[in-house]
Image 1 (cartoon, helix red, strand yellow):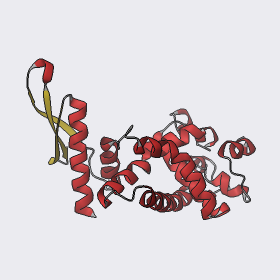
Image 2 (cartoon, one colour; image 1 turned 90 degrees about the vertical axis):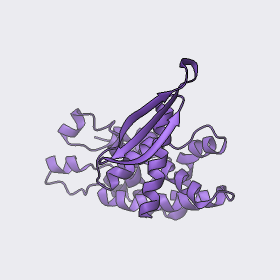
Image 3 (cartoon, helix red, strand yellow; image 1 turned 60 degrees about the vertical axis):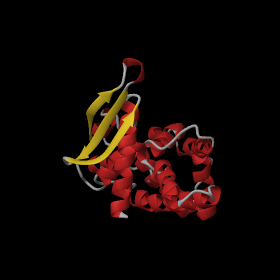
Image 4 (cartoon, one colour; image 1 turned 180 degrees about the vertical axis):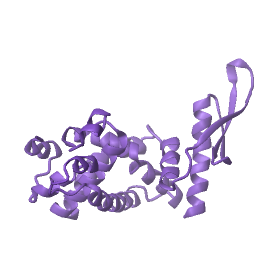
Length: 232
């Protein structure tokens, strides 16, 4: 059984309503194998946490980067709330240790699966918000995001556009991006690679770089910005 006292000590949050904490960790697969359980899955909390996270991050970025235009703020926000970042936060807090999973999900690596970890982070945010209120959840979120924000301020990391594009197309239920090398130019010591990214056979971005990875990132950035602008 999960040790919820240890969990709360790790989080630095002590719940008034313990059932909210437990619900944040209930994966749907657990209920499928335990039909008589009185627990609810964490999906409703995940829905709430997603909106709370978005609001807190938007407000923080608006205050922290007064010089940045809307487009750059949107890009940074997308990076901070994307699945990869949320999964990293979950890993740092060892949230996977407390996930309630069905046997199949457990043996197939469910405790380490990025989607499960990211969803649990959002569900936990929803639970903390309901139990502790806006001030506490704001403090919790910003504490978890502080390392990412500091690195962004100092130019040490930039948004992972390939991950952002992948997440965006998954949300819109389209096919995964496909990267295709168009050409390689220049001498061996100074090659330039040009790559385009296709989604459902449509070219949505093109990028050039000194290696294939850099070119793919530039192509993904172009495609992500185009898709975001076209759908608002």
